[in-house]
Image (cartoon, rainbow, N blue to C red):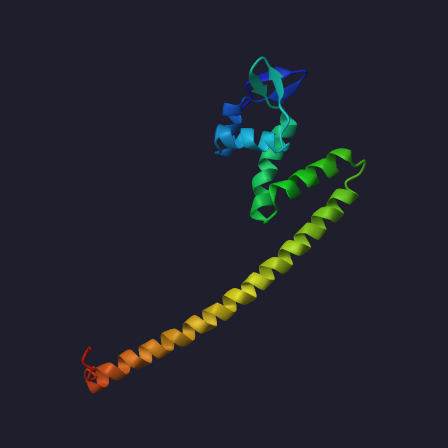
Length: 143
């Protein structure tokens, strides 16, 4: 969704980007406040370029991987300052490894909890099956 051209570069309004990426203009302004996007200004209008477009595409991917916005920003900064992409890739690889370890710990915790749930389910089913076979159990009177 190109709204205009500036020196052969596609430009986008905040509305264009909001529609394209299904985010609110407020979210885009927040990303700008966090330093992740850097539109130029024409009066009070923000004009986003291809760099902002690509970054807005990458932000949700980073979030889905479990990276914080500051980590995503650090990746962008490293990319912007690097003459080659090897340092950025090495840092990204380290972030991915850390995220993988965190997810594996969470998966182990979930597996353990699921095992406990299965034990409780089996106990409950056993009690219910026992009640059906022997009739209702006598209950102690309240009080």
